[in-house]
Amino acid sequence: MGHESVLELDVDDRDALDRMLRGLPGFEGYDARYQLYLFRRKATGSMPDAHAKIEERALYVCDNGCGGDVIEDIRAAIARLGINATARDL
Image (cartoon, rainbow, N blue to C red; front, top):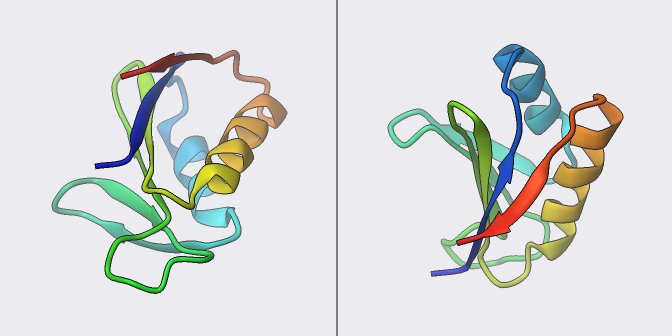
């Protein structure tokens, strides 16, 4: 698959994270079955550039090959919300 990592953080306001993810450039949709936020900016195939999932104490993110800019935007948006996050590769 892609480059997977986890941004460990306190998910006190799940709705704020949801709004932040949906407001990012390239947000394509939400897959309710897998609870994945899908992002597409460059990809032309069936696989999105990146996807993310809000977990209990973390935000899972996956760069599918051309989604590095999406992941960086997610990290920056989390910082703007004042949330401290620690990145850990999977």
